[in-house]
Image (tube, rainbow, N blue to C red):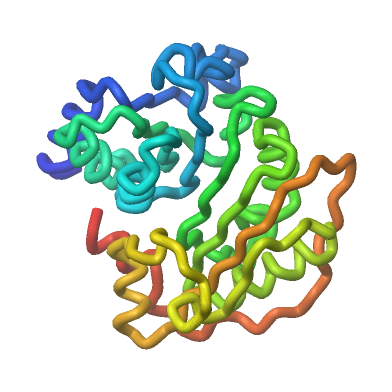
Length: 251
């Protein structure tokens, strides 16, 4: 491991708004002290909580927090060296409505209580074209989200991947979730929203390569059962030079 990563990990330990929790401890049943008490113990207010899952460097988490000071934002990712960027920026700016949680997203329901979260952002997640259960909009994740997301809570997906967008649209349709907005070309759409001004490093990479950005915003509703879509979707052809390579270059 490089000295730069080690230095980042050491600094992350000192940030008061970064929470790093052992997956082993959670699996062994250890409870997370902030669960159900994020606003009470950390944010010290009653503002809505918004998660960015798979936040990478945290640019979107920080950007949203700057735009919406009346909301609390928590970026979640497993890669500490990437999280450091947003954590450092928000710490230096003395932002009070930002936190970061380092953990596996598969375990996210262990960190938030019922109805504790108002919105979820999924920004450029890996489409996981060969692994349905790894897709962050797959029905197994929807089951997880409903454990802590408020009824009619908002889920945003922003993606360069036609595969991920098509799959998510079909999942939403099969489970009859209300759609607030959907477009396969965000920057040519009629959406007027300050969020359009936030572009992550990876998003700019896709735009520079001439790819369109897809976006869907839908409302979560409690379900006893979910319908996993059975649909054949053409795979993204450009993934051979894709996100993993760009991530490796930037770690």
